[in-house]
Structure formats: C-alpha cells, structure tokens
Image (cartoon, rainbow, N blue to C red):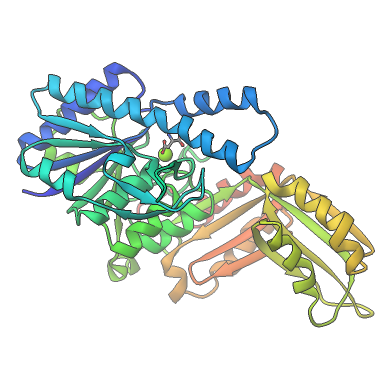
Length: 422
Ligand code: ASP
Ligand code: MG
C-alpha cells in the first residue's frame, strides 16, 4: 500500500463528465490498495471567469485590499471542484471528503495572489485516510495566520499538490494534465518534439523558469527541496487502463544525475515571450553604475532577468536588461524620468518585441562547445543574438520575437532532439 497524491488540472476537471472520469480513475487506484489524496484545479476557464468579473468592477486599480478580495473570489473555483469530485467519488462507492485550504489548514504567508505555503497540518487528512476515506483538497489556495484566504499564483495547484505530498511524505505525486508528459519543446511549435521519459529535477527547474508551462515553477522548487517523487502524465488516457502501465507513463522527474548523464547533452528547448528589453545608452563607465541603475528598479519591485553591459568607449558604456512585459511600461517610465537623468544616460530605449530562447541540459556540465553549437545554428538561420546568458545547465539568447519559432525549430533539429537518445 502506498500513499499517493493525484493532481488534476483544469481541463481534466472541465465538465461533470470529466470529473466522473477522474473519480473512476481515483477509485481504480484505491481499489488497487492505495491511499489517495486528490488535489484538483478549478474547472477550466473558471479562474479567468472569476477574475474577469472582479476586473469589470475594478479595471485598473489593484490595491492590497482589492488583492485580498481577488483571492477570496478566485479560491471559489477550487472549492467547487473539490465538492463535485467528492460527490463523484461517492457515486463510485468511495468514502470521500473535501477540504478547502483553510480546513486542512494549509498556512501561507500574507502575499495575496502569490502567497507561499509555510506549513500544512496533516492530522485531519491522516485521520481520514486511516478511516479509509479519499481526501480531496483544494489546489491553489491557503489561509494566512489571520485566516484570510490566499492564493498561490496562477498555476498554483501544482504547488499545492507537491506541498501536500511533501508534508505527508507521499510515495509519489502524480500530476495529471492535458499533455502526456514533459516534451523536448512545445509540440505546437515543433511537431517532432518528443516526450521525455525522465528529466532531472534541475533541468525541470530551468525549463519551468525559462517558460515551459507544464509545471508551476514553485512546485518544482518544492519537489526539489523535499525530494518528492513527481510524475507528469495524461488524464486523457482511458480511466481503466492497466494501473501498472499508467504508473510508469508520462515523464518522471528524477533526482539521480548519473542516470541522466548517459543521455543527450541538451534535453530541451524552452522559450519565453513574456520579456521586454530596455537600454540606457552612454552611461558613464564607473564603479557603482550598475547599482545606480538596478537599485531603483529593484526598489520598484521589478524583476530583472538578462543583463548586458558593453565595453566602454571614451568612458561611456551601454547597459541593457530584460524585465517581464507586465513591468515594461513602468520600468521604461522609471528609466526615462528618474534613473536615466540621474546617471546621465544619453538615451533610454525600449523594445518589447523580443523573446528568450534557451537550451537546457545537465549534459552541458560535462561537454564543451554546446553554446558554440547553438550560436552556429542561429547564425545559419541569420538570426541576430541580442543578449546571452548562461548557467551550468542552460544557455539563453534574447532575439527578435519574430524569429522565435524559427530558432526553436532549428535548435531542436541541431541538437537531434527529434531522435530518441541512444
Ligand atoms: N485555477 C488556478 C489557475 O487557473 C490554479 C491552477 O489551475 O493551478 O491558475
Ligand atoms: Mg497548470
């Protein structure tokens, strides 16, 4: 008997018919002798619908007190899901009980709309499991120390599921979703993209932070910290497929580097269209200048990603960095009106039409020339590289947005990702 956490995404919960299928699948696992905790998302489209209603009443202003209500509103989507799933499970002959975040409780900090889980009290859940019940817990939401309802940020149900699995020391956390695993890249862009049987936790972390949307990045961080065995798999297989087959389908996120070393140097290509570039021209090249520029940006709560500073000519240099597109207008404004004049920049430029394309692979640690191969591939496609950033297991380039798909396809081919690793 194992303790298993299942997470079902919005599409898997998209209709009562699908919820019935989820219940049948869960019941199959219970009948095979396992203890099950299930963490569903809101029905697909529901969170957008709920937040849309709030936006109708307050299109622009999002004060902290409005954020509090946004969480109170958005959290209801998951509350409906757990109730429906619990009923569907009972119809399957299971004993099932649903809990909202506050009932468990799942305690978070106070950052509305992007709260972090701090602790989970598993006593109640354990008692239910011991009594033979299936426990259905809301994804995405928790409660702060003053009993305000909070949410964990979009896509946060992944994190709820992994956190529950970590708190309960579950044997495995299965993330059921509308794709059948983690792919070498987005199959909508590269039809030859392949499903990976395994991916290391470090690679998954990079892929998630570089724009792959399969898992919320915080869920991967959580899985890494608590070493939660995590698998991404499809909820669209027939619910009655053989459980042994199901249990090894999808993509397993592994912690064993050695296994992985045997495989391809590059495991995947990630891309991200959510960034924008800003540039300060002709700033004096002297100690403290980066701080003078980036300090105020950080103070304005704007996250910075790739940074580049040119060699100086006549004591002056150019300084560029990327920020999230949501922060672009605010950042450009800050640079034009405050930072630029303060550091005597001759000009402030902005370009929101950029994207970041990255190659990711643990094998890069032990192979040379991987980045060079990437640059050769892009040059053969006549794609200009505007910025570069690297880490041990990834190389990212910032390029013109209009070449994104071309770059991803060319790199996927250049690194033989359409071929099964030997
Ligand atoms: N329902 C939430 C969202 O749409 C959380 C989730 O689905 O993971 O972002
Ligand atoms: Mg999701």
